[in-house]
Amino acid sequence: WLEFLNKKFDSGMIKKGYDKKLKTYRGDGSGLGDWLALPVKDTYLTHSGFYMASSRCIAYISNKLGNAKMRKKSVLLAELIRNRISSLYLWNGRDTFTYPMARYPSTPGPEMSLFARIVPGEKRCAVLKNWFRRKGEIWDGDEETLFLNELDSSYAEQFVNAGVLIKDDEDYLFSNSQWQGFGEGIFSIRYALKTLSDMGFHHIALRKASGIGFGTTEYMLTHNATTMWETWWRSEDVYSRNHPMLGAIAEWMSSSVAGVSVHPTTVGGRQVLFWPRFPKSATMLKFASSIQGTPVGDFAIAWRFENLPEDKSKYDSALVTVRIRLLVPPGGSGMLRLPLPSSKTTKIRISHTNSIPDLDAAR
Image 1 (tube, helix red, strand yellow):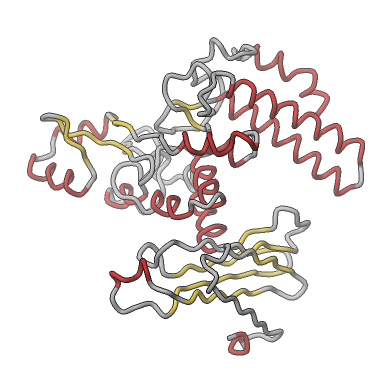
Image 2 (image 1 turned 135 degrees about the vertical axis):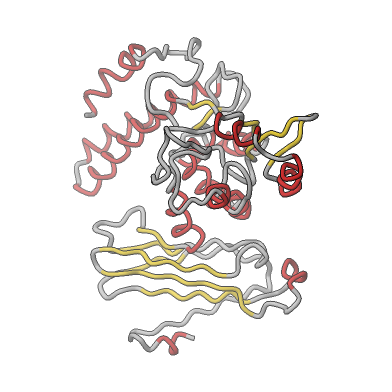
């Protein structure tokens, strides 16, 4: 595989229509890209990013097997592809990490590139800042247009007041919000949420996931969805209404909102990472829990805010206790990563029990 990439990567991409400087690339090239996203999909970044990731995987496996020669070879190839992407996506000087000739934001873009550490360290803050400047967009899909044509104006005004529609002169339109909803497709939805939570903007990730209106899970529910759809928009006869295409949000809920996932360097799932991210206020979320199954047994985490004031209007400024409970099965190990203390008065106390179900001993 490494030999194939070394020999065929450049010529193969050119054959697919991607020239070396992407000067003729306009997005939506040959390939999957970010399937059924609202913005323009970027197939070049998807292709190249996954080639880079495969080389990194081989490097990791080689390191575990003690094959230093193969590890070095795969690391060099991964860096070659990473540098190729970076040079192409930064040469226009915009620091947006969208393909050079792009007229509009594309996906995947900065979210995937930040998540996968494709963006050079000295450019990450600039790329992240520019990502936050992205806006939502108007959606004029067929099913939504048919729905609006039959919608009574009194109901339309209620939708406007609820934030589901926007009004442009006399027209009512659907639009998605970049930061209180989604436009991302099957790849970028995971990268967007994980990047935000991992880089200290978990509150924004929570806001995206709990948004209302078009481009949210709430929109699906208000249209009687009992399973996830294949698309953010309604489809009566083309796209599936029972499809896990956008299901990466569930992985984020377990690994970031609750805070348990298989440790990235474990072998055979023997170690998990406990890394709960807490909202800035209990107004957004009061508790979360999740179970991570592994070959050695189930790991579990549960956390909740305690000592909250009775007056919910004081949640944002209240001093509270966060109680975390972890469960590690016999033969397994867990690494706990706590958020940085918010002040000098923050206190941390850890206790444990070796018996089950005597969890009272862990209080």
